[in-house]
Amino acid sequence: MMFKKIKEGIWEMPKQGQMKVPARIFATEKLFGDIEQGAMQQAVNTAQLPGIQKAALGMPDLHFGYGFPIGGVAAFDEKEKGVVSPGGIGFDINCGIRLIRTNLAAEDIKPKLPELMDLLFKLIPAGVGQKGKIRVEKNELAEIYSRGARHMVEKGFGWKQDLERIEEKGRMKEANPEKVSEKAFKRGMPQIGTLGAGNHFVEVQAVEKIFDKDIAKSFGLFEGQAVVMLHSGSRGTGHQIATDYISVMQKAMEKYGIKVNDRQLACTPIESQEGKDYLEAMWCGVNYAFANRQAMSHWIREGFEQVFGQDAESLEMEVVYDVCHNVAKFEKHKINGKEKELLVHRKGATRAMPKGRPENPKIYAKTGHPAIIPGSMGTASYVLVGTETGLKESFASVCHGAGRAMSRHEAMRKKSGEQVKKELEAKGEVIKGKSLAGLAEEMPEAYKDIDEVIESVVLSGIGKKVARHLPLAVMKG
Amino acid sequence: MFELFEHKADAGVRGVGKSKEEAFAECAKAMFSVMADLKKIGSEEKFDVEIETNDLESLLVDFLNHLLYLRDVNEMLFSRFDLYITNDGGGWKLRGRAFGEKINKEKHGIKSDVKAASYHQLKVVEKNGKWLAQCVVDV
Image (cartoon, rainbow over all chains, first blue to last red; front, side, top):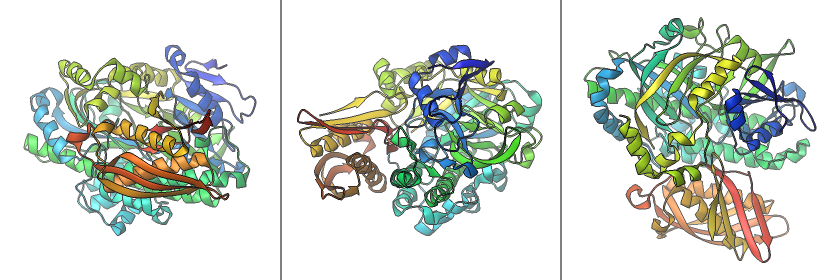
């Protein structure tokens, strides 16, 4: 595939054939060489969708997905017949990351980590098909769909100031539960406050290195500090919302004269009834995921309180920030010097709005909000911040993780879960997992090198490093 | 028979059989084999399944997604399927039963979660008297 370097860290395939815009990938030379043809083709397919603006983008962790690539960003203009595509957001609507700080030193808590992880494992329901501890009826679930993390805070899960530290303040106002199917309601009721399985996790980390002292200070981060990272999404309810509307759009596409070369790219115009319905339902999924992470944050605080014998307030366990990496949102961006309102799809990509943008909460107005990037199991994670270059080049988006380098199959053939666990434990990490087979699939070698991924972000200028964290203990579904 | 085929981030599930029904059932088994040790899943409980779609390929995706819905709502894993697929000229219809048992973490050798079945690499075809049904599932 003919991608050419157009700037340091940016590769482009010019517009050709059916493409409406170019396709661009942000990567170092080394990383670019490792991106599979299939993922590049998927970026090119995305560039053919109606109303797409500027370029179909691939973040440095780009890899082969279904329909859209994972690590893809695509923005559409409603006024130019732009589309909305559930496949461009993914089944796990608002899969995302929350970072919680503490005032504890990582060194000091090490001896207590086994006890802490045992307790978190009891407090946080996890694993395939696991029901939650919270029981909600249909009317309360509708509240969660409408009001997200806000509802959970009012119910006593977490602190009021947490809301200020979540994308969209923990609630997409435009969500409309009437657009959510009965099936999605039924899947949502038993699973609120559950971690899930696969690559979802709770990880205790040590802040190993600070790159920007002033910004880190505003984020409440310092070297040697113990922090907690939480990765989870909208569970079965989000999967059902996506499934329902992909099916709706399959049938409706013809009516709008839209043809796609992979059925998973199914889409309809943003202004169509199907498009509007999906957006209102999808935002319910977004709110569900915010509420889900809010409930689990409460139990993380509870776990720390019990093990360290102090309340979470005196441990200063503030939420640093909570980001979505599977979502679509309306945002204003400049295209050829003209400001436009675009529907920005991020599938496996993290928003990183620089300072000065209205999306930032007041507390981060002077810095831009934290963009939280988890590494793979056993490797580093990063906190980044957005830049003006990012706003211009990537619709203020950066990567969402390391990105898979090896299929689950390949990983399982290489090593057993037992072996992976032993290797990580030999490095001093505490590992708690519901499924050993699941651990094998998530082994560090199955992912790209997170440091190289972050170098790509820095090289292309779309984001700036603030802090690097190392894992101390992890709990997986 | 069923098998898994390679996909970088997710998993490809494929069923092959003498009939459409067998291929669909085997494909569903492939999907549950991603989640758990299929041999260890009993078949004491049964659920009725009824799906209608315009095309045969969507029938497979909707069927697999319906099984995931039943899994979440009833905390079930499935291991056996009795299916009937018909076409009345206006569209495709699948009727039948899914047999399985309640999820038991100790017993079933739980592996990974399957979030949904996708239309990616979706195929339902007949070749030399053999049916093949496959797609990529999001793990």
